[in-house]
Image 1: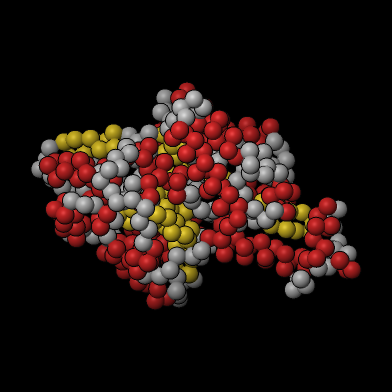
Image 2 (image 1 turned 90 degrees about the vertical axis):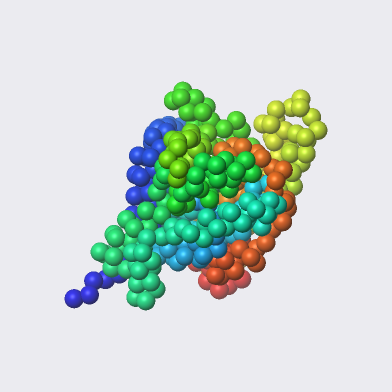
Length: 452
Ligand code: OOG
Ligand code: NI
């Protein structure tokens, strides 16, 4: 008898839970962070009982409890190609291209994540996956050495490669294979305290950029952080020191607002962990950390352009004046960003999910999109922000730098190469805006049918 295939959503859910357990054991501060986030979310929901009050919000509340994102850094193109197939087993696809070279970090990246609404609702686990760009390093000897070391490693177990092939052949995995896949795939993300290089090599990589040492010195791309989602990031940031957790100085992303937009993130500083080099000497390596995030409205291209402009303005102001605090600068610049749902929607700055108010009936004479505004103002149609599922390159760079130091000199800046990334990946990345646009469209079609 042949067993039925397990759905990719189920495999992703199992994998993200197994990963969280592994990371809690590897990095105990992450476990503490999870507790703080749980506590803060509970308090927030007590104070704001309307947050998930509607019946279909129950799923969203449920979703809050499952893990959100992790990050890995890969060393060579073939690793990225196989990683794409590995994530595909769990229904995760590459969305968006992120160029970190602009901030002096020699990587480019994508986020593997679910793209369908039901899958995101089930478990939105995503992995920010970056690929080292040795071509941005100007020391030719070091570049060659790093390449040689990376050429010798295989970050995937033979069995996970077989299971990936089986998944492609049979368009899925059965129950036994799925469980084995979770265990085998996890091995790629595990921490190795034995470096694959000697101490002298490690030091020369480190001297160039801490990131290069982190990617090249080890047998695999250890998961370097996991990030739960909180409903009140300012509260978690304030609580961290009470639990002896050293928080990053500033929260990345937009300032606090009535209607949260995009993504705000902060992290705790990376741990110094004992490692053994190939020549048996011992040392400390600093790479793994914990992070939290608060997510809000997904912005349209216009909204995003406004966000980028205001963020740039705040950063320029910071370069020119030391008098104002970071928070004050951000708040002043972002005063220009509308902060109520009606303006955000009417100015098409964000994406919304529309639905008939539960129990309401659509008047037949007004069953077209032309009547949308009136229907909303009468409360017959409701508009809810679509939550941002992706990442922000400037924030990501801030997170990288907070944990790796901000050695910037040795890297060629501002040099995106999406085509090279996609050629390593083996397919184009999905445009994030098209996904949000589709969600919004689908919700309108559900109300009005094809009537425009
Ligand atoms: C990834 C940093 C980016 C985020 O949340 O923006 C990131 C890394 O440090 O490898 O995870
Ligand atoms: Ni992160």
